[in-house]
Image (cartoon, rainbow, N blue to C red; front, top):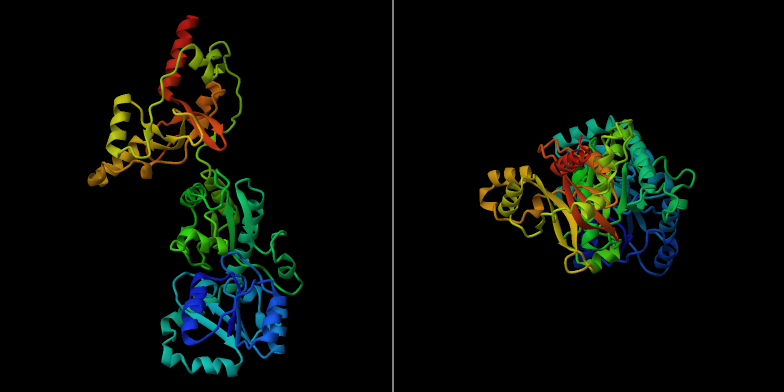
Amino acid sequence: HVVPPTDCSRRPRQFVTTVLPKMGVRLTVIDPADVTELERILSTEPVTVFFSEQITNPLCRVVDTPRIGELCKKYGVISCIDTTFATPLNHRPIEHGIDLVLHSGSKYLGGHNDVMAGVLCGSKLLIGKVRGLHGVLGGVVDPHAAYLLNRGLKTLALRVKQQNANAQALVEFLETHPVITKVHYPSVKDHRDYDVANRPGMFDGFGGVFSFEIRGGDGNPWSQDTFDATARFIDALKIPYIGPSLGGVETLIEQVRVIGYYDQPLEVRQRLSITNGLVRYACGIEDSADLIADVAQALEFVQPGYAAVERPVFEVDDENREWLKKTVQDLADSQGLQAPLTVTTDTPCAAAVAVMKKAGVDQLPVVRPLVGGGPTDLEVIAVVSMATLSRHMLSHPKQINAPCLPYSSSKFVVVEPTATLDQVVDALNAFPDRRTGDAGVVIVAEDRSSKKLLRYVVSRVDVVDFETTALEASGK
């Protein structure tokens, strides 16, 4: 009879729920914080082992190690704690009365993402029983892996100290960010296990792994919109590698829904609190300021589009720049603006390139019908680039008729119809695409519940045309 908590890594959960029952092992799952329920089970039912991670993956829950050790000893139950996330530097369960401590040596102990090994610590009696099965089950570390693990241990303290600091700095930044709904880390004061985790003598640090949840445009943590917003954030990061491991010198990141629970139905993910916006971030030893700056710029991609940044106002010749004070809507009302050229999510790559070539533009908005809008209302979700599509078609000529959406960018410049042409010029200057050479366009759109309702598209050519018309009219 094994008692584990509700929050733990996917594979151990699979093992205890699908493999052990076939061997006649009974399973009772409890909330990590519910020591009252644990005592009730231990006092009324025969239990062999209590097992938990400390800190748990991926929601960073904390169990009351001293109380668990006390209860297990009282009722003659073996206690086993996996402290891979915490590391021996931050938490030492044996000092709190736990019988066995488990580590994934592949993570912090190895420290370089290049070794596969496991570590089990405990009394000679218990370890002897496990060691006796090594030759039978084949769980024997090879000499080179042992060498790599020994090498990693030499720098463990230095690495964990930096990873602790990096995680804390990032958590403090994310706690106040408007698109983050929740941060899972024991130092956060509204963490469910904050009081236990921050009890004196419990932890010396909380490790380099934390998780957080991103708010999609519709605010629904289970929606496709939230899933897409989180994917845009992950893809926009420049420092972390996407990967399911942790504890190495390089920062790793994963969208938990994709990496660990891609095959699980909604009802299972809801029961485990694996939302579409849940991100697990495993800090490396990079500079914390660099990591924060990287996360900050990537969060700009969460909402489709972003407002043009305000720029310093310099003294200019007001008489010659009077036209810049006009708004986009003023021009639409007085001169009329051409209906924006667009492509849809299903437009083939070749067709999108043909439209841009004919119109003499290098970018087009990708649109779809605005939910809840009128029959002609369109929502802008991305911008497609002539350079990007041309490069793709040259590399993959058989896919020229594939939809252009996967090759579009969710980062584009948006202004309201009330924006002045001065602001439009600033917006165009704020977004040169150095990778493609595209001059870019400004999307003129109204905000409708975080959706971008397309009104006009303004390019650099349009701005020059506006200026020429204004100067001709003034006789300059």
